[in-house]
Image (cartoon, rainbow, N blue to C red; front, side, top):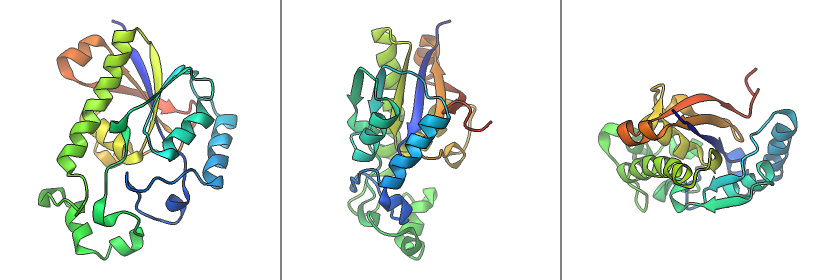
Length: 209
């Protein structure tokens, strides 16, 4: 049984991340100097795969992370569906402020099905995350590409993996540090029959050792 591999990685740090700002697809910040430094240190200290095909969110923080972690990649593919969720009324506000907002509390409670004004409905976000994950594996299978990397956002990764990955875990248990992520594999049989992938390791290699 042939397995295809996807290295799923969270982008580097922005100034908004350091400042505790809630940033979705409505905030397109570049990496800050600290974010660049951290990625360079990770790449120097640990091993990233030599992937020649790399998928990326269109957000600057993801595209710039690709250039640092996978400068040798020949095929860099921007996928709009890898963008972070649109946070609407919460966009650009500090986490410390949002914890006092009753609308934010409603959004954090999945039972209330609250959509922030100007934001992306949760059901639509999760649907596109699952679809784009399986779509990347379909691309690899159709093109005969054994492995690829993907640089995207923490929320996107948690949604993808909570829905589609084995072992089964809650979304928060799939949280990854900046510049880090997971080795995923999927066979054509798993893709067609079950729509699932397997998480088999951590990226960069040796990060948790």
